[in-house]
Length: 355
Image 1 (cartoon, rainbow, N blue to C red):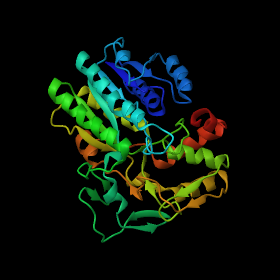
Image 2 (image 1 turned 45 degrees about the vertical axis):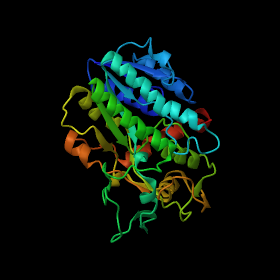
Image 3 (image 1 turned 180 degrees about the horizontal axis):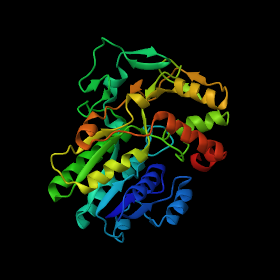
């Protein structure tokens, strides 16, 4: 099987490439990347050693697709993944949409031309912000959780947010770019008759993730804590009680292989994939973990919230379990330990990857 991975030299793309090569025989990998992210050149060298063909291309440029070799399936791991992209005063809203939406259109045209399937890695941020921001929560063991007996919106259970949760705006420009990509991808699949799978992922985390707070909070927090860099709890009660789940990208490899092998129309085209409640933790709990591993480090507090922030986001992946017999295998503790070992071995990682 010939597979094309976009954004292959990013954290997710490179991790998936290694995992797919380890898990499957008769797989030929080609990857494209525009190398604008610091640290991507490191992954390029390592992937080349594994025999991966890597081409310089930017998914925003339709012309860059004209010379790409044909593939049986495309895995889209190229995106601007920051929820503050386009609204933080530092990044361009136009470039966000060029990356995350127009880039998807170019991919879909490639798939149409080559009769290739597409796996779109989407995000929990497609879910509506207002009902999540207004969710009644309580603090339990330094972490928010939905308050028992409260009024919960449709699509939310104790296990997390399900696929039928509202996607009504506002969801952030980032979330809108991904949701629009989902809709366009499904329309192309129906119109031009090629398979499309949409995998909405929780926070992806692991060793080698680039060290930016808005794109890899677990990696950034551990690396910054270890090096005694300034850290701050922002928003809500200012005590770091906000909660996210985490998932290692390697855990996606088995379902990606299954999706590429099966064209079963009865399988759900959209599904959540996350570590779920078992992997969820607050920033305060993450700080405690870091204090135990690296020694104490004070964290500042700022009560003013940021745009689109929510107190608790855990994805319910029960649909993926039913449809694909999928479950995460890498525990939260193993993810954190892997990041910590990498951080200890790479003292310059924040400078290398986060500049």
